[in-house]
Each structure stands twice: as C-alpha cells, then as structure tokens.
View: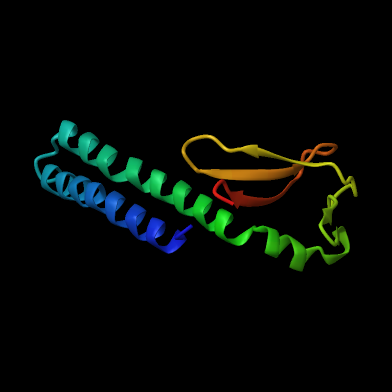
Length: 122
C-alpha cells in the first residue's frame, strides 16, 4: 500500500472543495447572503471532516501493522502464534473492514480488542 500517495490525494481532493467553500463564504459575507454563507460553509467543513477522518484512518493502518504488534508486544508473539495483549487469548481472527478501506482488522475473539491491521492483498 502506498499510504503517502493516498494522503496526498486526499489532501489535494479535499482542498479543492475547501477553497471553493472559503471563496464562497468570503464573497457572501459583505452582502450577508445567508445562502452563500451556508453553501460555502458546507463546501468548506464537510471536506474538512472527511479529510480529517480519512487521514486518521490511513495513519492508523500504516502504523498498527503486524510488525508493529511484534515490536510493541514481544511477549505475545511465540513464533507464528499470536495472543491478545489485553487478555492473553490465542484465538485471533480477521475481518474485512467496510467502506472501501481494503484492510483487515485482526482482533481477539474473547475480548474484542483490535490487535493490528493488514492490507487485503497480503
């Protein structure tokens, strides 16, 4: 996964809409055009929220990997066997995440704690 390219794309794509919204708000403020202010605020703040959430998600996927889990919790990794750092259970399952993330979440079946994420291609 090329996380840096994903971050650049999200920043560029959302920034286009944010600039349109900011210009609409600035043009509408002197005349106090309520429609222009609301429209501009929508075009500014909705992409801002999308960008914030998506960048957090990409950051989480790129940092909390299997290698990160092995380095952070070495006592829970015995060869190829993993166990949960919270409860010690060795039954770990993976489930596909929705919303076109193309990642899997590896979690403990006993306590439900998320251990790490992996891309679906691997």
